[in-house]
Image 1 (cartoon, rainbow over the protein chains, first blue to last red):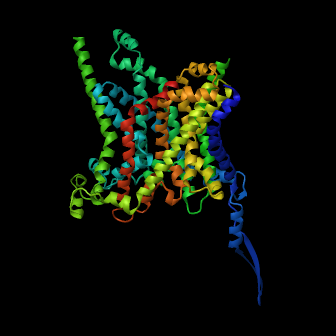
Image 2: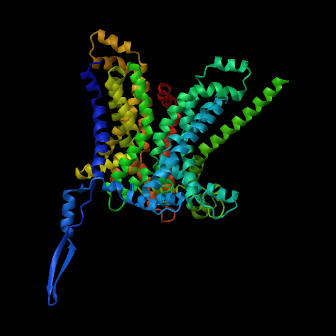
Length: 342
Length: 294
């Protein structure tokens, strides 16, 4: 295809991506380096019988005007990145200097909003992703053994947790785990503790969100693995059987190696999706105990005074995080590509 | 002797694996059935202080409304809180997002599949990175400029933003579908004197529909399920269903308002059920198309 034809074909799509994905990323970087204008102060001198006093007051009109004229604010460099709400370099240095133990230091770290969100987001990502793969594989192996008549309805039901709107899915479960909901009540009965509430303690909230993540992610892994199982070479399975391999050994040495490339694909997709976990935090009202990086950006934009610079700085840090997560994949693809070219 | 052991172990394996699948089916479907059932009850039954079986029997519902089922939640959500407006907005936004996404995506995906140049590889890689961007970080990039240029709050803004966010995925998916359509098809059309666009128009478009329908399903899901874009970029009267449901939660101080949210949750889930029922095969094939390539 000639360059010019290619350009015409790709143009609408490329323009949309540049305008609404690439430029917003630039916009985020620019916003993160600015900070809202300070209030304009006017100094007035009051002279009375006992001499003159200087008084400074806020000129609200001038402040409003300045802020309206330059909504971006004034240039602040990287100041926002290192403030208490983000990387908090000063606080960390202090905590490190005053630490009594390493645990104490991490406890201090956990009190900083950005690190708290980062801790939850990373835990969520790296617990949910492997669990989804394992559960998806088990379901796929199970469904594969069903009689054909049952397969269709089972796949239908299995798809539901995945296609459901994330906010709606988490709300449905949130209502059920409520202390007065059916799961909440059952848990109280099982553990014989009428005060048990999944919402109250941070560890239980984390577990709840992770369980939700696995519930909603497993169907994707299941479908991909299930399709992979249909293409397992029956000759090699038969050969393994003749050589005396048990069912377990057949799975371990024939099926799983065959599914390995699919597992890589699923983990890539799941890492991307889990790192941006957002709706479940909103749906489960878990912002106090388990905020995610996406959630703190949302909270900055939702607050009474929109903190554009703060939201933007967190966004930039999140994008850097995504890039680090993706780096191994990108490097590998680049090597493959180079290998092909040579 | 050994064969009976093998038989017994495989029978126990079948029992275990069937039990596991059954357990999964319950875990996957029970929340939906429970909420559907509960949406026809009053709040006192849905969240039963006394006994959870009341949600099944509808004790409080019978006392408060005179029947064991009530449509009060639905009436409150659709009539009183005007949920139908949100439903119409959702329909408009989803429809146009899907149509525009597919138009842009088929053209771009076709070009990427047929161009052997280096830059098409790079474009696909960049699309992959864009695909990984958390939507809320992009929204934080839009917000200030959109306020300034008075683009904020309008339905077309949300549509074009959703189209753009959809593009990386759409491009990847359609690109792999077009790779499966033999190159000879458009090559021979070009030999017969068509230019590239005519070849696309007369040869490719008639055979591309299965791929386009599958991709369209996923574009639909993305637009329909979105919360970050629609909740941040739309004004109150242009809200779609998902942010509207979130709005109900903010105003749940009054007794019974939770049931509005429950009813609207069930209403918003219904189209998704229908979709899976009719297009299960396409969804499964779409999910695996990317995987088999990768």
